Length: 296
Image (tube, rainbow, N blue to C red; front, top):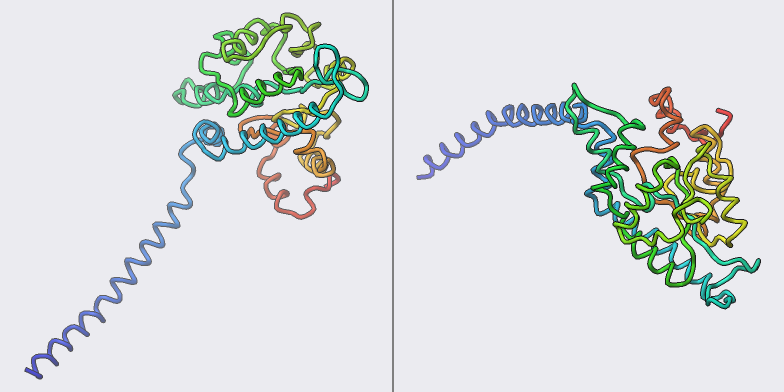
């Protein structure tokens, strides 16, 4: 009995010794396979991933809801503590009625289905953003356009405080009627948007910079908040380079979340236009601690 036990133990030890190289081989193969998987190029282009993040991720919704909640707290606090005129509308220290200024696309209106539609074209017919495709999308009254999460409640609450919602968009003036139809279909109050004179909807005419339109609004209203997905949606000059834009954003730290509110847009914007010439070079520079120096 003892001899049989010793023999079994000996055989078991031999098998363990023989199995070690196999285990190492499998481990090495698995490690190698993981490295190969890590090195595979992405199956989808970056813009599609970004659009899917907007359409499907809970994180995107959470950021939007958080931003609109913070903005509403600012508007409510300012409006409820302000004096009021005969119409019960709050006025600022300059006696002007109060207003919130917001961008439209990717701030109030979610157009991510348009970007996905472009990406899902076959390689032979694949399209990129262009004025004809975009105008066609808008003229279809944005059949798949929705409000950015939290935008509808924000607008409703702001207007219940008798604060005016003003929209400044770089959509061309030729798309005014289509834009109004889209907003109306989503339950947004469009009264006074029929022309630019109403100062409810200011579209692009001669230049994309919004400074002149922002000044027009500030002449009539006391602006209590700005909302946008691009630095160009806010007053001031942020520069023309990635470094200068980043530095200027840091310098304006006290405005973010208190007076200016940013919605996330990883698909397009001025931020990606300044990277087009050499994105890899920008990627290397971004890892440098001196990146925020515009002189670099």
